[in-house]
Length: 202
Image (cartoon, rainbow, N blue to C red; front, top):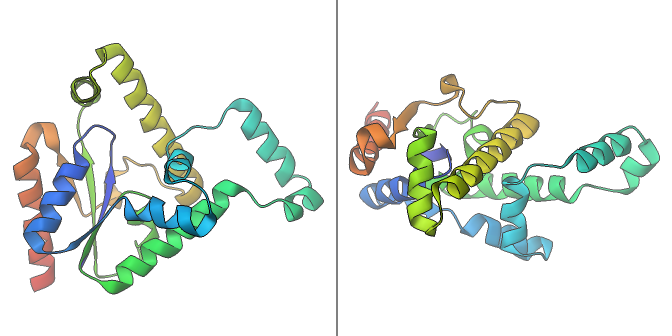
């Protein structure tokens, strides 16, 4: 069984996913993805992560549109972003083929959506609560933290919409949705573990 996580920034998804993997005895796939992609594409893990969690400027969007409308340019230049996405998708499928793993983010819920052995999970929480967690975590003001949470939310939503034609918070896309403010981390993890065990036994 594969557990694929989508997450809102600051919701504690890594903590929840790690607890799920530990309880089930599954491999936890998180930082391995950007690190492996970086090695294969000869770039840095930070660059790989940045391509998923950043929003394009107006100039970047305009340039992309111009390139798409110019066949000779589009044929000659392959977007570095697209290359990263293709490599991430290939690695996600490779890890899933090994079975028994928890994959955090990177569009894994959509990349693996056709597989019957996948449980898709969304870890969410209210914006204010997530911003306060990030403020405490980074030791910055609430205003700074909230601005960053909103920025990452927009970037991840745009990434999912552009590459997978899915709204990140489309609840119909997930088998289980947990709210870490409402449930707490332990109960959220336990709910996901119970869902995996029930699906495995079915």
